[in-house]
Amino acid sequence: MYTGPSVSHHMGIPTTLTEVLRTYEPVIGLEVHAQLRTESKLFCGAPNRYDPEQPNQAVTEYCAGLPGQLPVLNVQAVDMAITAGLALECTIRTHSVWARKQYFYPDLPKGYQISQYDKPICEGGRLVIRDEQGEQRTIGITRIHMEEDAGKSIHVKGRPYSLVDYSRAGVPLIEIVSDPDLRSAQEATQYLRELRSILRTLGVCDGNMERGNFRCDANVSIRPRGQTSLGERVELKNINSFRFVEQAIEIEIIRHAQVLEQGGTISQETRLFDPDRKQTRTMRSKEEAEDYRYFPDPDLPPLVVSESHVNELREILPELPANRRQRWMNTWNIPEEHAISFAEERALADFFDAAVGSQATLAPAIANLIKTEILRELKDTPEAIAESKLKPEDLRTLIVHREEGKISSSQAKKIFAKLWKGAGSIEALLKAEGEQIQDLSVLTPIIEALIQANPKQAEQLKAGQSKLAGYFVGQVMKQTKGQADPALVQKLLTKALEKMG
Ligand code: ADP
Ligand code: MG
Image 1: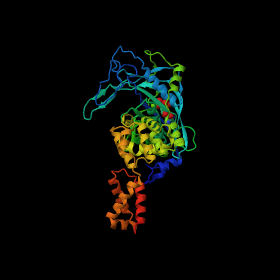
Image 2: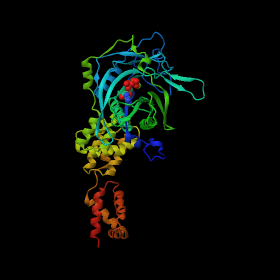
Image 3: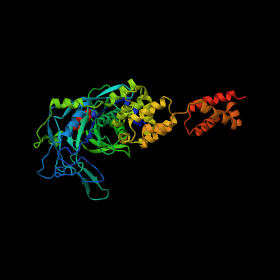
Image 4: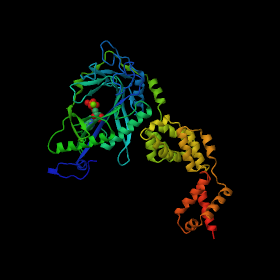
């Protein structure tokens, strides 16, 4: 992206990523905030429904920070956090501690955020991604801790005030912190995609970056190749799309190299990415843990989770995307591209599995139909398959009929369109289309009559103007109301022409 040819090359200062990568190795660690899809908030009964169009509609006295309110823990959020931890192969702490993190900001009415500090609920997991060469790489998960989201400040342009929406205050979050194991911007976005896909598969997070329910801070540093100790890092805050994550990291890598090559030093700070100017700029110097005055929250006892409860949650874990992709590719011969796109969305993956059922040999045909017809209908919302009127087993029946030649592919398409709209049962639709006409005593006379009626075209076709075949086949289809088997008609046509004097 920023690897194009450089215009100038002053005093050996690198201007492109390619140049930087010759001498330096990037190191990246990601912190992801994922909002949990619970019914209610983390410590009060307010609904977990943050809608920017309807500010301050999901607020109780507790999330507004009024005095005298005490937190009551939402166990659904805890189960979701543990589930995420299990899917990421973490150790689950049976004894974790809620900590107050103090800072002052208008969107944090209590003056502190309840989080977890030195005893987070999950630690030491891993996530496997593929690097640019397609090799598997294991990225360590340092920790996952639970915390409450802050409200949302809205700065109104040209006004001397800001607005604040407390509907988001108290929404449960998990923060998933990776080890500094990522080595390129592409690896970082790969990691994010896989993580998002896992959380969506678990049903614990919507994973929508634009809407802010899946947010990423990227820590970036570089070091001379061969050096084992880490370089000084900066933290890039709240980047809201995969594309911007990649751009921001690459820009930051180049900036670091330029600073170092000019004899400067990188200072640990928090920076913001400006997608319009394609640059990062200082937001603030990095806070240290001491700045937050962490201490265990006196209103909440330590969170105790039994081993047996963790095991119960482990047992009901759904099949994870990586597993599904492998199973589809290895046992069903599904192309990797399709496997990746279906596995990313749980509802779609479930639909595909249900449609194939025990008919493994049909899997490639079904995958193809999902890719071409269904995903085209669903466009950017593959999850909407869950609400579609098309039943997976009907799709299978349809493909069976088509593969057995009982209906033509154009008939299959017609029936599919009706099933998609919910217009009729599969049985009725198959019956209405009728069995494909393969009866020679029906087809041959039609073809012969057509040749007789169009002697010139028939001659030309016979002489090699194969374009005309379409005309004849089309006429037969028309006369049989689309029920003739077009491949058979083509064969009979060739035969009939050969017989011509
Ligand atoms: P903090 O909570 O202050 O942001 P952490 O120690 O929890 O700090 O680290 C946050 C993230 O920074 C982690 O994802 C970690 O992998 C990453 N990180 C730490 N050191 C470096 C470094 N030198 N270069 C890149 N990333 C780093
Ligand atoms: Mg941090």
